[in-house]
Length: 384
Image (cartoon, rainbow, N blue to C red):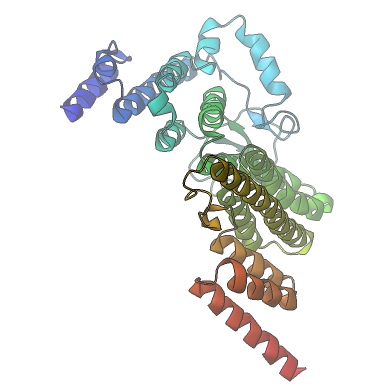
């Protein structure tokens, strides 16, 4: 039944350029598949209108993001975007398409249902359905303003000059919905937002590096800036996530992100800055969670005292401290790996000795890591 309904909606979309009148959604308002299918088909409708505008020579609904405009705005949308807004006042169709009125209406109606709004996978499927920005290329030694997308730019002697993203407003709306509905409930939501920010920064960094290749004197400086730019935007998102949810899982996600970027390499100042930030984060996590544990112990003692006064059972007050927030095994592993990477093996051994004794004594991986690092330290001492 569900597959037949989806098929009929697809056929109607292909024949008429629009979806059905929403009867399927009214009957199955809690169907994730139908919401995603309807959202995707409205995007396809916009793509058809964009193709028609291009064929008629009406131009793009948004100015491309280039090296000249990417220094302002959050997602590479700088002054060019503002100019596009002015032009759109005389072009209602361009304004309608750029604002993605139909997909945003579907997204808004979907998010009005609490059950669907709390489904992380649905938010991610909405994001995946939005087309990615299209890279634009031009001849390397010309100042032509004619931009085009090609499959093999290197073979055609073209260089990247910008990105065209007619769905930037829609993408930002879906991201804001994810933050609004799950930002205080799901740590994984912040992970997804951080990866989105990293992809945006990666595109802008690639564009910046491509443009800097023309200026050999600035090549090294731009290369260092690339690493900082890519991590900074995602780190800002994760910091916002920590402000909303300072949980062990959130600290683990943040630390895992920094550790992955550290392993990617890049060397020099970039690697040193990432390692320093990672170590500072882990120390901060341990300190803040320790404060929360002390506060929880005080609350338990208070509840126990109240129960004694009321002569009731004190099972809850006598519960163990296992539920108190603690850093996960994975976070401690990342912390110790970072210490070893920067040459602080003694600190790694001391930390692991403390953790395996008092925090996670039943974790085989931490015991193995302790033995491995201790063996390496003894080996270095012997060779010395």
